[in-house]
Amino acid sequence: MSDQTKILVVDDEENIRFAVSNILTTNGYAVVSVSNGEDAFLELKKLSYDFVICDVRMPGMDGMELLRTLQHNRMETTVIMMSAYGNIDSAIEAIKAGAYDYIPKPFKPDELVLTVKKAEERLKLYRENLVLKKAIAHDYDFNSIIGKSEKILGVLNEIRRVSNYKTTVLITGESGTGKDLVAKAIHYNSDRKDRPFISINCGAIPESLLESELFGYAKGAFTGAYAAKQGLFETADTGTMFLDEIGDMPFNLQVKLLRAIEESRISRIGDIRSTAVDIRLIAATSKVLPEEVKKGTFRDDLFYRLNVFNIKLPPLRERREDIPLLSVHFMKKNAVNLAKPIKGFEDGVMDMFMGYPWYGNIRELENVIERACIMTEGELITAESIPDSIKTKKESGSPAAEGLSIRRAQAGLEAELIKKALQETGGNKTRASQILEISLRALMYKLKEYGIE
Image (cartoon, rainbow, N blue to C red):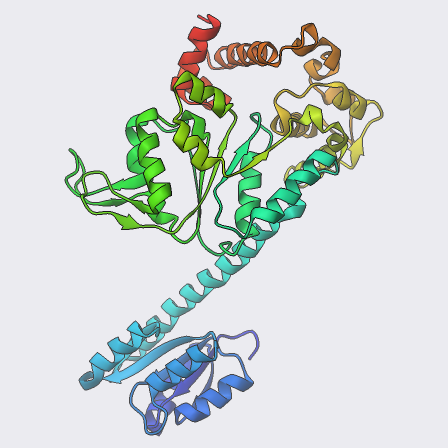
C-alpha cells in the first residue's frame, strides 16, 4: 500500500462504497472505505491518505463537517466530494470551503477515475513545489554567501538583523559583488520566505515598458490594451519585491515608486482606482546614489526612503582572504555541472588569483573558473587553462595604482569593458549593454562621457 496512491472513501450507502472502491482498486489505487465522518476522522488520524472521497450528506458528521474538522486539525489531504444532483449547491459550497472537486451521483467509472487522476497531477505539482521551495531556501540560506573575511561576516550579520523586519533595504556595491544573492538571502530567511520573490532589473527594460511591468494597466489604457494586466507589485503582494539597478530607473517613474512605497498602494496605468499591496521592498544599485542625486538624475526623497537600511557589499579585492574559498566552491560546482573529475588547483594558480585585481568581482571569478574547468582535462586546474589577462595583470599594475583616484580608476575600467563588449558584439550596442548588465540608455551616456565611437 505504501507505493500506491491511498484513497479513503466515505459514504453511508454500502453500495456506493463498494462501487467506488471497486472502480479505484481496478485502476491501481489502494482503497479503504468507512461509513461515516467520525470513522473517517479516526482513520485519518491513524494513517495518512492522499485523497478522501466523501459524500456531502451523511448522518452524524457529514462531509462539510469532516472537511472543517480536517482543516481545524491541519490534516493536509485532498478532499473530493460526492453529491446527488439535488445537492449540487452543497458540493459547490464545499469547494468554496476548501474541497478540491466534486463528483455528481450517479457517476460513470471514467468520470470518477478522471477526477482522481486530475487530483493526482495537482498533488504531484504541489509536492514538487514543496521540494523546490526547500531547495531554493537551502540555496539562499546564510551558508550560500561564502566567505570568512571580516567584511563579509559583517554583511551576514546585517542580513540576520534585518531579515524578519519589513524595513526597506538598499544594497550597494560594484557590479558582480552578489547583490541579488543578498536580496534572496534576506527574503528566504524572513517570515515571507513562502511568499513570492519578484525581481526586476530597472535598467534592462525600456523606459516605455517599465511602468506597465511594475504597475500593470487597465483595459483600454492605451492602444493594444485589450485586457487588464496585473503589474509586478501586485504579483509580489505579501512577498518581496527586488528592484535591481534602481539607479537606472527613469526619473519620471521615481515619483510613482515613491508614492507606492509610502502609501502601500499602487494604481494601474489608466485606472483611477488604487490597490493596496503588502510588500517588502529591497533595492540594489552599483551607482553611488548621493552623486546621482547631486546630478539631478535621482530623486533625493526616494533615495532617503530607500536608504533606511543600507548593506554595502565589499569588492572582491577588499576581501582577498575569501578568494580561495570562492574558487573551490566554483570549481566543485562546475565539476559537477560539467561531469568532470576536477578536484583542485595546480600549485601557482591560486597565487595568480590572489594577485589579480578582480574588477569584475565574484562574477568575473566565477566565469574564469567555469572557463578553466571546460579547458581542464585532468583532476587539477592548471595555469594553462587560465586566461593570459589573469596571469599578467597584477594589482600593482591596476589603474588605481597610477593615482589614488578611485573615480578615475573606475572610469578607466568602465571604458575598457565597454570597448571589449562592443568588440565582442561587432558594435551592437543593445547586445553590448546586455553583456555589461546596464541599460542601453546608460551605455549611450557612457559612450558620450568617455568619447568612445
